[in-house]
Image 1 (cartoon, rainbow, N blue to C red):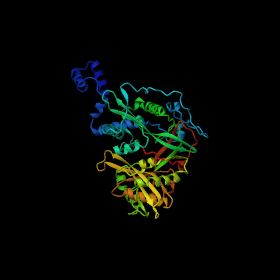
Image 2: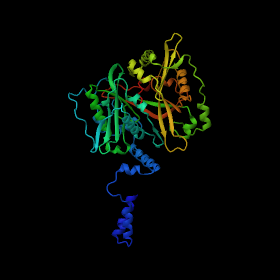
Image 3: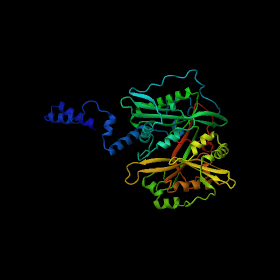
Image 4: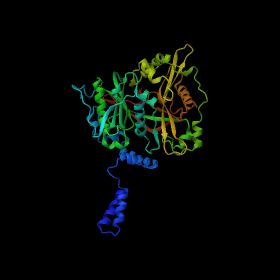
Length: 461
């Protein structure tokens, strides 16, 4: 709008307007002295205008033709992914093995970034660096299409998600602005042992790929992926597993997220996108306020460190039926499942003999609610693993709902994928299927596609 007004003033001046002097003063009045920093210019706007601008930029970055189905994705050109060792869209895979054998020589120097930016390896043991990463992710990682709900990761959550046994600081890869050292990009990998079909491999799980929303047209994402791949390859690993909410070449499996409201009034007031449309508050209450006041499973208690060997045995037996599953060491069980306040909760069922007969765990993800007069935050519990040799799975997950809803936890929502055997309890416990899909991908490995009920790996992201 400002540019069109300026053009009009210039046209009138060229036409010999008598108000030439006044118009020149008006034209110069708003013109900054020197080149304005676009970040500074945007930050100077009122908060409401900033959010409107960011919403428009968010929708523009998504594009209007983002594929939602495999058929739509096949019509799209993926120039970057066509250069990567991943299955092609539409390709029917019947074999198992690497797509590209190990390179004879691995690139020594980092990949080039656009001018004005530099690589930085993030030391998450440094509180200031961890705080910076929190700010980048919380402001730019992802948000809903209406720009009303945004993830709010805590420092404790990121330490849990990014520092499991065997983690390497080199795989916490950041991008900074040269002039002010601001962190504007990040990608991470963490190691893990995984079994896909009959093959066991040491791989990395790729997490938290994030580029500052004002820089997404600079195409930094491919460079981040290439640089992380280079660093991982230098350590002798050639495969990766990752998830995404968008369709890329080519999903190994696609799971649907289901949601179970725990605080329906709040979810309706913030217009949470996963709720059923055209449902009244009275109907919501009648559906979702039917949870018991107390848990029903005898012997249910919070996990302690001494439970790790028993939990590992339970999970090994339970996960053995799936085509894609983690191979957990005792140290992995302790890291991923041992309770941490506001991060991960795990409960076990102890039988009369003292042996463990069940386990259920869920991790918490917080979100900030934007532009709402009452509510500022949402808390969602995400099911991690559930296994039992004695207790009915429906009862065990229902107990998890009761515990998550308790005042001491304060979760507003409980989420679960239709992976593993979860379909056995989703509808019975009044979960709603959402529009959110989680697509699973393998990097540099081919194997046949699998249905969601054959996926036994959950990647907190």
